[in-house]
Image (cartoon, rainbow, N blue to C red; front, top):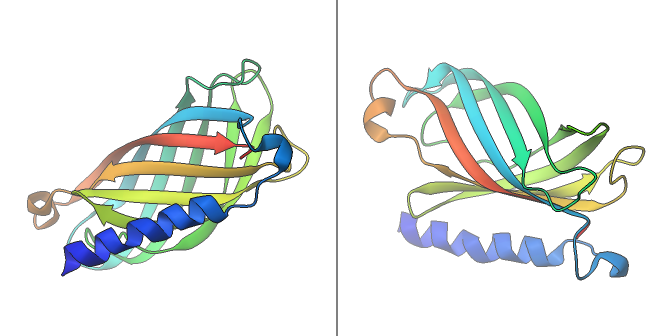
Length: 172
């Protein structure tokens, strides 16, 4: 039954991608597409016992299509109340700043959702780049896949890091 409900969420995520507002000037080619590698660090580690945890997401953007902004990075941190290895599937909203190595930054204000699919946690963030920075006013989406936490580690000392990979698209 859980597998069916997880797979049922995939069309919802796909619909969110298709429903994102588009500017006709950006309809065919995004302004920026990057490979997104992220490390999620939990303190204390995730376990099967609900508790308040601090997290840090440290990301590296590489192989970007814009020659002017070919790579970058970001760091985002926060607190999650009642977090467990199995409760990572919750929606929310946040702001993340992409810092481009060639100079400048892009502030991404977004809503996210997640689902489990084939042993992974799939995150989808959809929003826009705030005016005033690089790519200001563009719509954006970030799609990241993270292997689900190891159940054996979750029942013991916990999981302190998860590694994910995905894409960032700006100017959809």
